[in-house]
Structure formats: C-alpha cells, structure tokens
Amino acid sequence: MCGIVGYIGNNDSKEILLKGLEKLEYRGYDSAGIAVKNEDGVHVFKAKGRIAELRGIVDENVFAEAGIGHTRWATHGVPSKVNSHPHQSESGRFTLVHNGVIENYDLLKREYLADVHFQSETDTEVIVQLVEKFAREGLSTLEAFRKTLKLLHGSYALALLDAEDNETIYVAKNKSPLLVGVGDSFNVVASDAMAMLQVTNQFVELMDKEIVIVTKNEVTIQTLDGVAISRAPFTAELDASDIEKGTYPHYMLKEIDEQPAVLRKIIQAYQNEQGQLEIDADIIDAVKNSDRIYIIAAGTSYHAGLVGKQFIEKVAKVPVEVHISSEFGYNMPLLSEKPLFIFISQSGETADSRAVLVQVKEMGYPALTITNVPGSTLSREADHTLLLYAGPEIAVASTKAYTAQLAVLAILAEVTAKSRGLEVNFDLTHELGLVANAMEVLCDSKEMIEVMAREFLSVTRNAFFIGRGIDFYVGLEGALKLKEISYIQAEGFAGGELKHGTIALIEEGTPVIALATQESVNLSIRGNVKEVVSRGANPCIISMEGLNMDEDSFVIPEVHDLLTPLISVIPLQLLAYYAALHRDCDVDKPRNLAKSVTVE
Ligand code: F6R
Image (cartoon, rainbow, N blue to C red):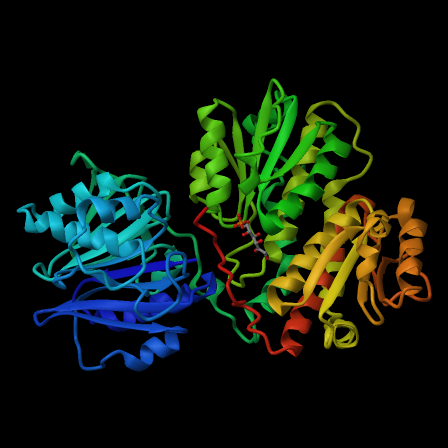
C-alpha cells in the first residue's frame, strides 16, 4: 500500500528519496512522486507507473537538502499523474504526501474550501488546501497543520513541506504507520523502516494523533494540543541484506526457499534451555483462562487461522472460531463469556484487523497478536505478541509468513495442552524438524513443479483446488496464491461440496488440483477426483507418501498428519509462481494489490 519517505540533512535528498521509494515498491503502488526543496523553492516530480518512470523525469541538476516522497496505491481517484502525490496547495506554498483515507474529506471541502480550485480527485488535496487556508488566516504553519489535523476523520500518515521554511518537515499520524529515523546531522521519515535503512537503523516510533517537527538536527514530538513528548529511538533489527533479492529472480522464490530456515529459527526461538517449547506464561494463562478463542485475520493469514483452529482444538482442546476481519465488525457472533482474541497478521498493520482490535479492546477483552513485525500497530495495541521470526516478507504474495504462522500456532497449541495437563502424543519439536527437512526436499523439486505448472496451468482460464478436512484449508490458500499472481480464476472447495454446485463449472480440460494428505479422507477425495474426471477435468493430485497412488502428479514426504499444511502448501506456492512466470506476470508486484493493506 502507499509508502512515505522524507529526508532533511546536508546531502542531496533526491537519490535518498528515490532509493527509499524503491525499497517500498514491494508494497504495491500505481504512481510515485517526490518533492524537494531548496532556495529556489519546491520542485515536484510525479509519474504514473513504476519508480523507474519517476527516475526518468527527475531533474538531475536540482540539489536540495530536504524532500518528501510517496508511492500511491489509488483509493480516491484513478491512478494518474495528477492524482499522484505529493499534492500542493493552491499557491504552491505547501506540499504534502499522505497515506490513509480521510473519511470526511468531502464535507471539509464543502465547508471550508468552496472557493478553492482543486487539481486532483484525492482526499489528500483537501488536507494541504486546509493548511494553506488556515495559514492565510494568519496561523503559523505548525498551528495551521494542527488545526487541520483536528478536523480530519480517518487514517493518515503525513509529511508536509512549507516553501517558506527550508528547515522543517512537519509530520503526523493517525492509524497509518509512520516512523522518524534519526541520524547525525540529518533526520528521515518513513512509513516502513526498510525504506531508510540505507541511512540509519535508529527510529522513533510515532503514536496516533502526534505531530512531529523534523529538522536536520532535531525531532520534536507533540500531542495535537502541543504537549511535548520525549521518546527514545529504537534500533531496527533489520539487516539490509534481508531485503535484497540476491541471486534470485524474484522475492517470492527467495521467500519460498527460506521456509525451512524460518521454521528452524522458530523452533529455536520458542525453545527454552532444556530444549522444551516454551511460550510466555502470561500468554498461556490468557489461553487457559478463556473459554473460546476468536481468531481474526485477512487473506492468507485467515487461511492460516483455519488450520490453526485444527491445531488448537485437537491438541489444546480449546474451542476456536475463525473470522475474516473485514466482516467481524458487522457480523459479530454472540461472544462466549471469556473470549480471547488472536489476531494473525504478517504485517501487523492490516487496517481491517486493527479495526476489530480497537473494537474488542473497547469491550475489555484480552488480545494476542501473532505477527512478523515487532512494534507493528497490532502488536503494540494487543496485550500480548508472538513473533513469527520469518524475516522481511517482500513479495506481495505471502509464503514464508503463512508457514511461520502455522508453526507458531502449532507451538501455541502444544504448550497450552501441556500446561493444561493434557497428553500430547507426539514430540512437536521433532515433528517440526522433520517438516523443515521435508520443506527442503520440496524446495529442491522446482523443476518438476515447473513442468506441472506448464501442463496444468499454462493455457487455462480457471482452476479448482479441492481437499477435505485440513487439506481443504490448504486448497483455499493454493487458490489465493494462484489467482493473485497469475490472474487465473481459481477457487478452493471442500471436496464434498463440489456436487452441490461447483461441478457445473467443470469443462473439458479444467484443471482440478486435489490434495490427498489425510488418511481418513483419502478415498473420499479420490472419489471426488473421479467425479470431476468423468466430466472432463484435468486432475493434478498432490498426495503424501504412504497414501499415494499411481495416478498422482506429485508426492510430498510423509510428516505428522496435523502438520501436512506446512509442506503441502509449498508445491501450491511453486505452482502459482511458475504459472505466473509462464504468463509473463509481475510475480512480486501483482496488479491492483498491496503488500500491507492499511485502509479499511
Ligand atoms: C496474500 C496476502 C494477503 C495477506 C492479507 C493480510 O498472499 O498476502 O492476503 O495475507 O492482506 O495481511 P497481513 O497478514 O499482513 O494482515
């Protein structure tokens, strides 16, 4: 989703801003721009499309020691140069970049700005025009900015330049992530630390409804009412090489390959000195004290939640419901007496999930966030956090975060079960170790899966994924991966549901990818395959060693039957990857999608 960068110091800001925006490309965007300021005034460069287009139009000869930049993922107004950020006020004095959505922008426009000529269709332009209006009425820039912020309803991360002040970038945030990075004789602004790791790893966290005055030597944080706040910087524990592709053609492939190492890292991170899996006693108490767990998540994380429900119910014997975060606010079920909410989110910034977190905190319920990003909004605002230790996930399509989420949920289930005195008849550490080995075998089977992708997915318009039990949930994830990066219409179904409607869609050659990793339903799912084959489908059966049959296209190594999703998903991730590649799609940055969805 949209990204923000800013720099003020002694060096030329252009290259720092452009490099910063390149680091944010993975989040998804459709236009980009920078504004840099020197004694001659503010110079704005904007382009629809990729940062490469923007680079092409930036004037090399402009040297400016302060600037702001933005990648835009369109919400209000089509992707275009005119709607891209930075936006300027009518006179050109103020220049602004914005992430988020201003819900009352239309009202503000009518009430305060009826006589202003707007350039764009964006909600952002309302903010910058308001600052100018209030400055024209005699307020200082800081006061005008503050007055504007008090009128805004919605989410925002903002960086503002004033052409009459070469010393300052004004910054504010509400619900959208934003950090200030500190350096020696320079300071920076970034919606994601990754963007500015090129110059610093020291960042100051900003809270909602704070205003920050950033100069090259100082960072001053205030509340909206002007009360000063002091906050020490933290060190971003990111290695710049974690966010490089290295020799890989795509981040997605790199992240698929990282899965065995991530799993081993998780096992280590959750092991105590005696080699036992351990989770904070507070978290285990929260699970034990609850009579029902509500898992809230979106997309791939929701799919991880569906598998996690199986782990927690089967191993820890606590009832679990899994809900799509964007629906929960409207469709809240009757809650149990002692609910515990678990938010699963790779980014920890998903606005739909955060809206539910705010709601349940207001209701006084405990919340645990399972996330890959320490210090993310969902982590900060929940009572407890469990980390995924997956390292930065850059490709828009989530892969290693999904398997990391499954591993952490399995560990949570096992530790809870043991602390409730329940018998766990397998050694999870050992079983996860076997899973990591099996993952390696699968990552080494790329050539075979590439051939399968050609055979089953290179010309098709649509594809179906079927499975029963836990395989059904993995099928949902396989379908999501395929559709989001290859644009093939793909759906996941419970095998038994086919005959209740979906089978009508099967035509000659329709690919049906069937998962058969569960002994208890092996024959039933194979029966479903026969049903579709007799109607012309092209079946691709992915089974597990020990359950495999001659007709199977791919056999995954045998692992504990509860943990099969951690490995059966890998051929599906690779199938999606190669299908997208064969179709010439932009694997890491699929159209219309953003990595971190920070608007509701
Ligand atoms: C799909 C994908 C998305 C995310 C979803 C939630 O590959 O990545 O479906 O899973 O947007 O994001 P997080 O996990 O960051 O809350």
